[in-house]
View (cartoon, rainbow, N blue to C red):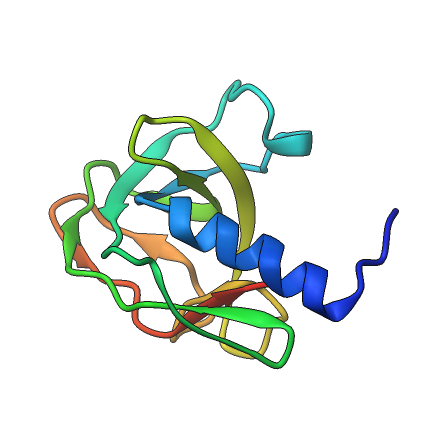
Length: 127
């Protein structure tokens, strides 16, 4: 594992943030290295604004709030995948409850979503 100098980490995260166009929430466990999906199911696609981040603070990229998107399949969110505008997977991020160290925190302990409901990403960060 490499530990990057703070200015390099900031540059890399901002470059990633400039590319993010969509966050997709999936059920199941994230494949290693943002690999091929196997038995994971897509629950909702959430477009991000451009740019997708608002600032870099405390060694994390603070991501911009999104508009609401409709959940297409009910399930428990296991991870989120970031995509660029061409549909290329950029990476996977962790999902958890408010007390977790996850990148994307739900306001309640359960990460259950229901088909037909609207989901919006408010305060989230990656790093």
